[in-house]
Image (cartoon, rainbow, N blue to C red):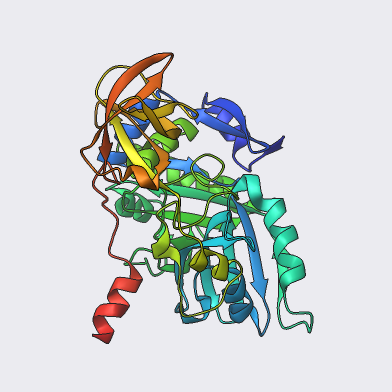
Length: 373
């Protein structure tokens, strides 16, 4: 198992550590409920250093990334990031990630920890053989902290941030925190306003201590994987390995909005041609219990789907989750279903995603579209 640059500091803070994707990470510092509540009401800090960072660089970096990803990277302005997918030839989702365009010759990918090595091995042989683009794996060389919540901007300023603060969701700039060089991106995995901060591993402790000190003035706290899972579930965000994987196509997962059809990408032809036979959906239980992955989903006596992930939402006061149902079942928000929880049928309602109001800033893309109009 690997440690992040913050693992010893988490131990000192009394965090409960668990293994996740080959890393030793905090699952909670206090209680998951308190950490979820802090993120929605004030702010919470998350160690996301386990996420893989890969750079594609060279004269052909943008075009090479465009050929691999569902996003047309060449059309993304510098200092802007977008959610994207890596697909296999059959259109299955190899990974979901964020692509950061530093320039046409420097593209940064932040990928799921569990897929990091696989992604590097998949991307490398697909880059131009003439040397126009190359790959750099930054695993173990960087740190990353997410600061999420309505008071995140104030907290970042209090941590002695110097530089231009990104205004739009998905925008990023280079700056400094307590004199240390960082990249600050207005992105996150919680549905709240906030930032993800990246820097060199040797600067990690100084940035950690500055953010931790500033957090005290805003009733903000460190949070772990448990709270992170609840928060992403409330937003209906899919988790790779549970809600999406290599056997799932973007259209089945209701991620068609991530497909830029104005360019060719690996798996694009397969996605275009395949008619989805199942669809991802959200649900909210009407009784006690939590529906976990693998639980069968019924309409009447007929099984129409299966749960892929579920949890208890502290903000909604109910168990929620995601799953896949046969397209022919034509599930709609408000439909009554039953889910088998610990051997008993529990009533549930199909719920439109997200479950909780998203409070992120408008995206850079929306701004670009308004300006062009």
